[in-house]
Image (cartoon, rainbow, N blue to C red):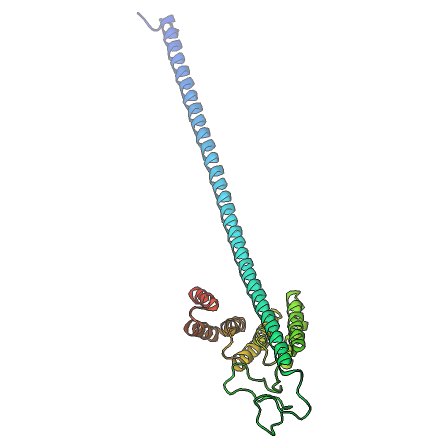
Amino acid sequence: MRWWSERGAVTPAVLFLALILTASVARAALFDDDEARKRIDLLRQRVDQMDQRLSSVEGTVKSQGLVDLLKDIEQIKADIAKLRGQQEVLTYELEQAQKRQRDLYIDLDGRLRKLETATGGAPAPGATAPGAPTGQDTGAAPPPVAGSANPPLPGTAARGPATATDLAGEQRAYDSALDLFKAGSYPAAITGFQSFVRSYPRSPLAPSALYWAGNAQFAQRDYKGAIATQRQLLSAYPDSQKIPDALLNIASSQSELGDRAGARRTLEDIVSRYPSSDAAAKAKQRLAAR
């Protein structure tokens, strides 16, 4: 077959071959477009997957932050519950102490009445008290007992046997100052407790009055004053059950003043001298946290 004519014209066979080649190229181009579309679709799917993963990660981060926040809230709730428990224990102990004090007053009043009945009333003027040496001035107040756990504070005088009326007034004075403390009237409470200690230095409630006065000063951020008041308790009433709590308040005040070393020494002193006290348990916790 001849591809070209003698004049150079393209024969029908050449045209047919050209058509076939053109169709092949078109199909190849069409195939390339399909591949491109497939790749674009694949990339689009991968982008969508990445978006989904990113959203998932963001959700996880947000949920994790919420979990941490919930944990903090639960911890705060636990701390509040603990403080409420301590407050309830303190309130109970205070009520029991007041009850024991009232029972003591009632018992003392009963004994005084029995004594008055047995002696037939008060002794005549100039008469000596039962058991007193002849010529002794019974009108003078008895001197403080040597080694007494509750000696008179400086500037106060020892008092004689208290009557039921005196004891009732003593209890009212203490309760009044304590009510002011509970109400948050700290300046008035401090004045009330200090006045109570001056008026009743040998009262079983005097150590508690000093302790609460120091706490009221601490609540007012008068840390130096709180330390001075608690140390007054340590000096005047060394056998009081309030000593461990007073030392704990001193440690708190020292810490607030930036005296870390002094606070540590005080906490260690509590643990060493009063290992079974509630204050010692709190002191151990603070030492472990430092």
